[in-house]
Every structure is written in C-alpha cells, then in structure tokens.
Image 1 (cartoon, one colour):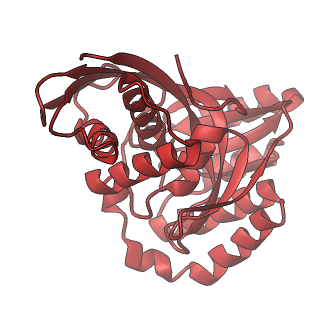
Image 2: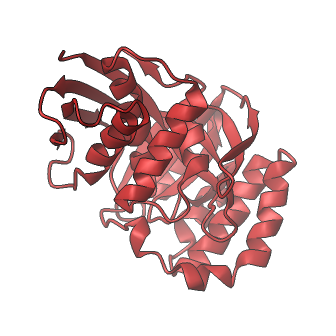
Length: 289
C-alpha cells in the first residue's frame, strides 16, 4: 500500500503567549501551510522537503508522521515522503510550526485511510512539536487556533480547549515581519516567569472575551521580557489599530485593524525595517484536500 493525501491548515496569531503561564490564547488567520504525505514501504524512513524554506530543519515533519503512524500501530509497516508548501514565514512567531504539524498529521491520517477526532489530530501534532523541540509549552493554543480558526483560549499544560469564539469578519491583520529569525527553543523561560503576574491579568482579559486588550497587553509584556523594541506596536496603535503586540516570542508584531485604517497602520509599520504581510481573520477548519 502506498497511500497519498494532502491537507491544509491555516496560520494563527498570539493573543496570550502561553510560555509564562502554561495557558494561552490565539486566533486564526488565513495564511496557510499545505502538506502532501506519500506512504512508502520503507518502515522508519521518513523524508521531508520544505519547499518554501529548504534550509529549515525537517525534524517536525518526521516527528509528525511518526506520531500518527505510532498512534495507529503501523510504524513498522510504513515510512513516508512529505512535502510542505507555505506562505507563513518561519521562526518569526507566526505559528509556522503549528500549521505545519496540523497539516502533516491530518494528511498522514488521510493517507492511511483512517479518520480521527479533530482534537486528537491537534494533540498528535502538538506532541510532535514537543518531540521536535520547536515549542516550550506544546503550543496547544496556537495549534487549536490554526486547526479550528476563530479565537481560542486554552490550558496548554492540560491540553484543554476552554473556549472558541467567532470573530468579526471585517478585521484585517497586518504582520510586521523583521528579517531576523527567533527560535522558540532559544527563549529564556526563567526570565519570562518574572512577568507571570502581569500575563495573568492579560489572560483574564482573554477569558472574559476582551481579546484585543489582552493581545496588546500581552505584546507589551513580552516585548519587555524578551528585549524587543515596542515601537512598531505603539506606532500601529497610534495610527488606529484595534490591537497590536508581539506575536509569539517574536520578532513579528501583529496589528489588528478595521478596514478604514489599513493604509495608515501599514504605512506606520513600513517605517520599521522588515516586510508587512496582510491577512484576514480565519474561521475555516483544517481539512484534507
């Protein structure tokens, strides 16, 4: 048997970074990652190709496929060849790993001719991200926002989806993306613990549904903790953004804007070195293609 399947999962942006609390919140955006998984008759041999960033490690691909094969008890029957395509910049805090793990896990399940509960697929991808060392907390919040769309609030340590909310469709999401990369595995988690009481306040706002206040507060806290210049976020806010703050562990910044403010906020962000990506809020679930 050599089953082949493809799947797509969308991107996400931080509302609350879960590193300090083990609890987080995020929302879906319409950036995307597609994965094609072709099963082979070479057990334990999993090869990956990241077409959009060939220099990046393929360890997450290998771990995602392995987790699914192990779940179904067929790791000694199959290997796989995997290709991914994505318009999400890697290692900028834009949830490239969560989208990739979701798409790869979902495509592997489909290639086996099997079906799984959505949350189980998410959890296999999260476990793979932990195996690959691309996450500190398991990024369950990012993974749920990527897979389900909308805004989610989660307990990452317990792998619990506490809340999912549909967001207004008329909002645009601008990302200021510096050229430098920052890998989550390199984050100084101990230093971030110092900011725990402040992150708790932001998380409470997210639980109450005040997502944009939570996003802005979280962004300022983590910019300070990680040593980032907050001026891109502050410039976005001063030109009319509904919310703005560091995405993930950076260096990208998310700005949520109403349609009439897109040009002004984009111009403010373009004054800082890097590129500006434009996306929409996403409510579409990850799916097999």
